[in-house]
Length: 256
Image 1 (cartoon, rainbow, N blue to C red):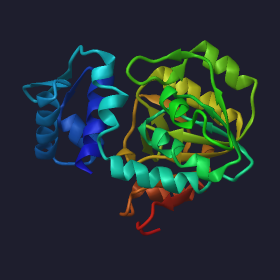
Image 2: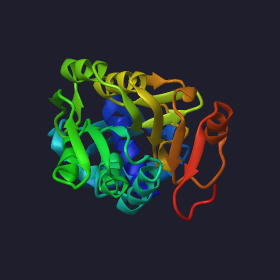
Image 3: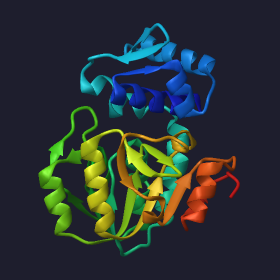
């Protein structure tokens, strides 16, 4: 869980530029002492700078704080979520796969659900699905966001408006009783467009994302049909999701 929290802490600091210990503790639902330890680790990796009472984002190359760094954090959790989410995909359907470390892991499990037509919003997912038997791969056009290699911008939005999918598998930065949200405006815009073009949406998020609000609103809770998560403890966010009609799907070995 600590590595999941590191991911989220880094996103929060980079999204705001500067946050205090108290603000991070409130948004993450942990103690200030825990936040201090996490910030110390991020500072050791050269990703943030500790200042009195909090931390500020560093002007580092996008790739230094992007996909390649976060992919190594909580790999086992992402693998479990990816496997469980892939099991919800019906063979023979059309799937839109969002960008993100968890959905890139999910991509590795999709050939087992073939035949499928899979459109991707991630160059990492495209690389994992290319030349796989039974997979018809479509790469949505757009600008590759530095460090993340997610496909965003007007070209991506225009391409999505011309297509229709059975299932959208959505990666999300934060989920709160007030809705789904993201840390990047371009990512949020693509997710909103994708939600409009899918018959159903399956969201994937590890437990650290629950109860957190990012600044770019994506959609109300009820816009999503299912959430696959490793969260094992009931909380206000899970209760709000169920109240909104969202099916909460545990990963293998986790209680329902």
